[in-house]
Image (cartoon, rainbow, N blue to C red):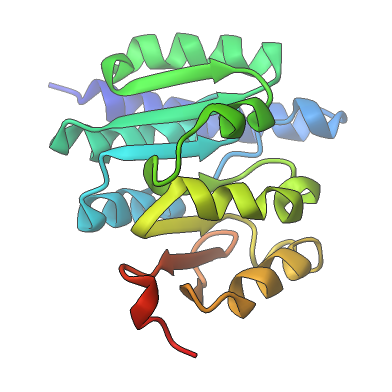
Amino acid sequence: MRDPLKALLQELEAFSKSHDRKTADHSAKMLNITRDTGEFLSVLVRAAGARRVLELGTSNGYSTLWLASAARLGGGLVTTVELSDFKVGLASSNFAKSGLASSIALLHEDIGNVFARSAADSFDFVFLDTDRSRYVGWWPDLKRVLRPGGMLVVDNATTHPHELAAFIDLINADSAFAACLVPVGNGEFVAVKAHELNHIRT
């Protein structure tokens, strides 16, 4: 029997490529992660045992499905945030078809609002793939909501290095984080928060 999730992921890959080729408006493009990035994220979530996953930038839900398929193994939940009405509609439909809807909380609102009501150490894993111009301003909240030992993954680190340079410099300058660039897909910048801040490097 054909795996319905696998079939849906393949369907979304084809849709994204076709849609983005025909769409001039950048904000309306799906801009999905690559399949190898999805596989990489799934492995990271499993390896970290992450149960509280935050995704900033849902699009049509392709990356969310990779995250949720891993998080659900430990009874986890992916909270994914998207502002676009059009993309929220697509994602909602895809989640319903995926069999993973119970492992996903889709928030249709501005990310700043989500940060404002999120307690410190709220998330084990954060995937960042949205408006890169806002990342620097979000850095204090990203640090706050990520638990000690938690992981932050930033997409497009090799395809858009200039847009991410200031943000990556902030992370690299923060002694509470160890980070590296992984040449998978569009480039994933991976940062891990120290377990105990009194044991961080100086």
